Length: 564
Image (tube, rainbow, N blue to C red; front, side, top):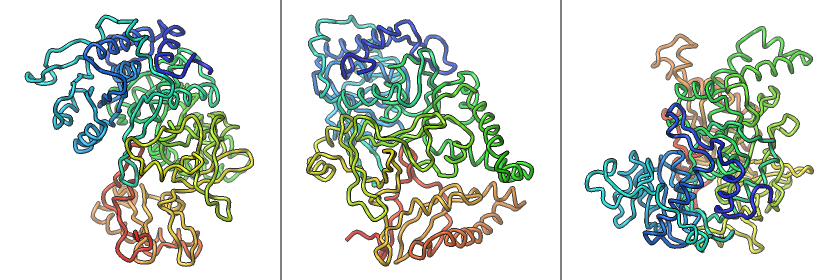
């Protein structure tokens, strides 16, 4: 153990409050001092919530859902729930009402902490304790309207230390049940223990970057996702950092002022953000500026040019970044290679909700970054590759203290998810080199069998397509014995660059995607060539971690990937 005396959330709260008590833990961007919260206040408020929950009969094992955007009160509610052995059920705020109601019923929740904005999504389940997340008020009756209804202020409730000590959970007790919405469409409740989350964070506190108390974090991802919760919140709190929430969606108009004012040392994001920045601000410079293109052709000068661009990019993010974590989905290869050449302090991580989430990662130092690999496997994990092919690629299977207890009330899924000797099957394909570094090659379920039994990885083809001019995103799926690529173009930029109307640009787009097919096919082996291309008008539907929901784009009858 590095930062705590035990892997339970009461131990965690005690450790950070005693070590960093008067330091600011939380702020909300441009919301005033009344939203600031010190580490000691976090302890007081969460203990008060725990005491209140016990007073109304909440027992060990009871499930309470949390639905709302990231905020200091979100964490207070979470800690209040889990510190007495009850179970938090985080729900992503962008889940539709249908999914919210399904999770509330499937989890057997006895209560829900929800902010005013999302309250309407929860009204379809009767008999729940209702907690207003905005101000941590228990609302016995919402007859006057949830927003205005009077109730009991939980964070000012008298703390019952004796009761809290008697209800302290064990390391193996369940802390969270997180219902995923993945690329396959099947929602599953992932059961994570106190040990799963806290040991994952604790082990990583000094492995990937050296953090100092008082460093600033700008949090832009939902806390209800385990990637942000474990790495962006719990880990940074273990190190005494100051976390600022945007308080709004991370639109450019909000994010840019926050970056210049907060000047964060640490940020976590998903690849889509950095890929957009690269395509909008970096690629045009290195592709269209003839002077820079000439300099980049000189192997002696090119490193200095990349580093200069990297410094300017770092300045955009506040000029103090020491750790820019990218996870949740694969990062485009060209983007990663640029970040590496530019000495930008990015750090990749790989994992799943089921692994709390970290399985492998790299530090933000240039020497720790190895394009094509997400990084070294974490210390406590044992990772093997199942059913390896001739290239050494196989399904990644993990065993360790970060691996979930199982899927909630789904013994059928658990028997499929674990091997007979206890390894969790991730469903991802990977390769491990002699330095114990992991490279992700695709998904088992998306792998396509070629006409001669060859393994085709659609993600690799999509990377080639996405690196073409004007391409925003793409999806390769089997259809009628071949491969079809659905391609989303940036029609507005195409129209502007070519001095065309939007209508003319769409017509040109139909011709352009055929050129893309020819260009990409020239780089592919015969069995993995694209047989057809289609223009995708609307953006692809994505999961909360920005992976495309492939199941929404079914294969036509007769396609290679049809279910038997």
